[in-house]
Image (cartoon, rainbow, N blue to C red):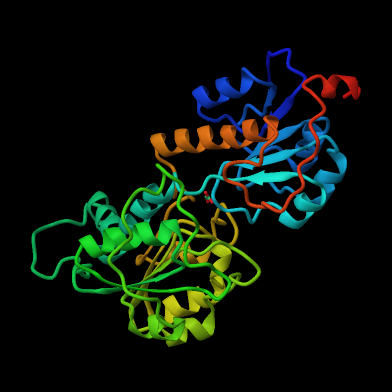
Length: 354
Ligand code: GLV
């Protein structure tokens, strides 16, 4: 779907996003919108990116070297996500394409889901709802659906960027004892952006070694990006090192956890439950064994899915594109070392015969 604008700047937007942000983009560029919630097949993504100055992408769009080769005019990929594991960053930098993403604006919303999953698993909320709907609720009994308290429990947060810190603030307010570990690949903090990460740092002491976090935590929340260093970082060995009955919460990326090892840990009772917003393969296969565990709550990758946050993400994704059109790096740039392509004037696109 083409949104009419006579500008020579061309942008492919790979899914419908919040209308005000889309309108702002369409006021400055010729926007080609993939008007479907299902992702464009990769061949279409590549084809529609050809001749574009920018593409606005989602976590489920694979942005690889082949795409950069076929889109020589591309100056910026703007991902509507904080995560960047769908983008070959090195190839983007080699191709002179800036990569923008949307950190900060989604931290609170994602942290709220992490806490919601903790409650859901610990207090068996989804299981209890199914119990009621199955008409199995006959009477009140003192042993019905007993769960676990968050207050007084130890929460171990792995990864302490803006989302990990937002989880920590909430958990501390709930009376949890919060500890955190940094993966060696991760920096403790990203520079806060004024007006976005305004909340005070959480009341948590220094990081602890991962081994100590695994041994002491009643709940473990994963808040790391997916990188080669974090892929599979929670596997058999880490499950074996966890406190018996610990509850794992993953709102980061499915591939941070070795899913076979997760299933074994649930079967053996080493793990007391899991709240999973992300999986190795999404969507989950209908015969996936994870669907059989009553103590596992699964949500369909909705960490940042609130109306307001998706609007803020769309605005920031558009800002990242407009920054590049104005000759600057995106304000949230994932490859700041990139050498931006020269802008040869707004008419450049049409002159080059795209
Ligand atoms: C969502 O998964 C994100 O990375 O923002």
